[in-house]
Length: 147
Ligand code: CA
Ligand code: CA
Image 1 (spheres, rainbow, N blue to C red):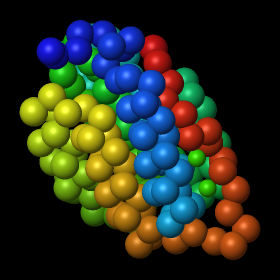
Image 2 (image 1 turned 90 degrees about the vertical axis):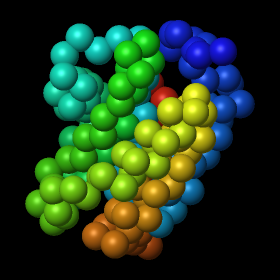
Image 3 (image 1 turned 120 degrees about the vertical axis):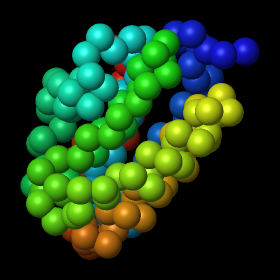
Image 4 (image 1 turned 60 degrees about the vertical axis):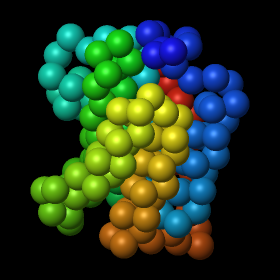
């Protein structure tokens, strides 16, 4: 069955697995990852990801290294928005491999695994530029927000 809305998109257990993936990813990097899901996206998906990033105040990190994975469930669309601290130091195609991983799972309907693998991969990517420090704090909550 193809999930049609935010409520049926992920089960509680799947949501927990995603939150756990964020925690594991953030064990390796000072980057802060969040996931936002909503039913539809009226605008361009990248533009909407930026808007949600802003609404969630994800720019509130010391190194400006927050990353939002945004999913519009009904539209089967997703986007990744990384803050300017990341964009300043990475190539333009930085998120392409993460996007491909997510996309391949989404195509087969495995949304949970797409997000889990995407988050873990993003964590590995971020680690190169933003390694974890001894005094790391969890600057943004490891939660899935819903619009
Ligand atoms: Ca952190
Ligand atoms: Ca966090």
